[in-house]
Image 1 (cartoon, rainbow, N blue to C red):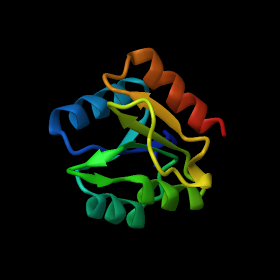
Image 2 (image 1 turned 135 degrees about the vertical axis):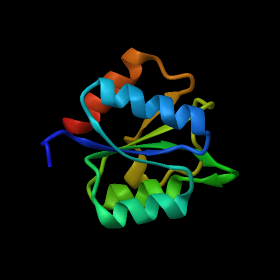
Image 3 (image 1 turned 90 degrees about the vertical axis):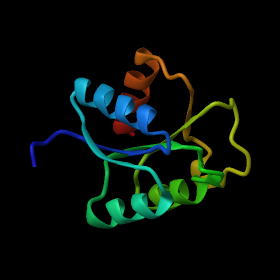
Image 4 (image 1 turned 120 degrees about the horizontal axis):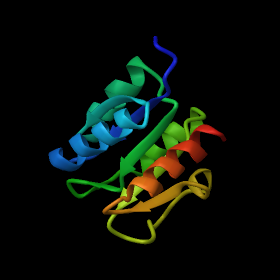
Length: 119
């Protein structure tokens, strides 16, 4: 490996996923994915543990909260990307999860990833 932090991107909208991946690459991170489904995300995580994760809160009508809880249990910091200000039914393990409201500004993305990696 090249020593760069690996950020898992889980996003069901292809253009947003591609753009997030490019922005993370420009910030100096390696992108794991992007995964467009929860099953795809599970397969990626089974192959390689990410250093942090950006999860779309709603993947084709399915919540990514359970995936976030699984990642948190593995010690992976999680941020949810959503069009909403609040995500309902977050378990205690995700109480500190960052919520990034779409569209995500460059500064918000950079500072959220830095903060997750410093935990």
